[in-house]
Length: 161
Image 1 (cartoon, rainbow, N blue to C red):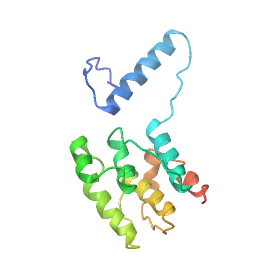
Image 2 (cartoon, one colour; image 1 turned 180 degrees about the vertical axis):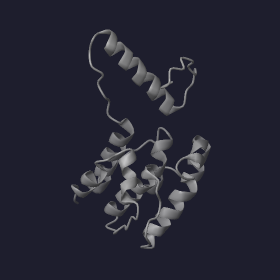
Image 3 (spheres, helix red, strand yellow; image 1 turned 90 degrees about the vertical axis):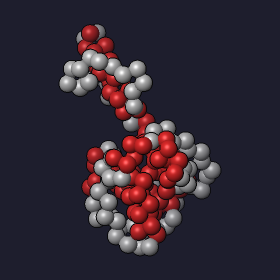
C-alpha cells in the first residue's frame, strides 16, 4: 500500500486498515490543497486511559480490540494467553512470540528479575504493571518503547498514586 500497490483487501487486518485510512486522508487533504493531519494512536490512548484508572484504584473496563492490545490486556487480567492466541494468531510472529514472551516477562517482573525483552509492547505493559503494583521493574532495553510511544517514560514517571 505504501509503495503504490492499489489492490485493497476487503477485510484487511487492523494495521493495514489504518494504512488505507491514512493514505485516503493524505490524498483527500492534498486534493484540497491542505496539509495532512496526523492522528493519535487510539491503541495507546485507550491503554493509557485504562492504566490511569487502574492506578487511581478505579474500576475500569478494557476491551482488547486488536493484537497490539494483547500485552497490556494480559498483564492486567483482561484476556488470557489462550484467548489472545485464538483471536490473533499473529501474536506468535511479532518482534517476539508475544504469547510466550509476555508470560515469561511478567513472571520475571514478579520475581524481581531483570526484564530482557526488546518488544516495545511487552516493555510498556510490564512497566505499567510494575507501577500499579508498586514493584520496581528493572528493564534492560527501556528504549524499546520508542518504536510506538517515545514519550512513554515521561508519561509513566509523571503519574503517581
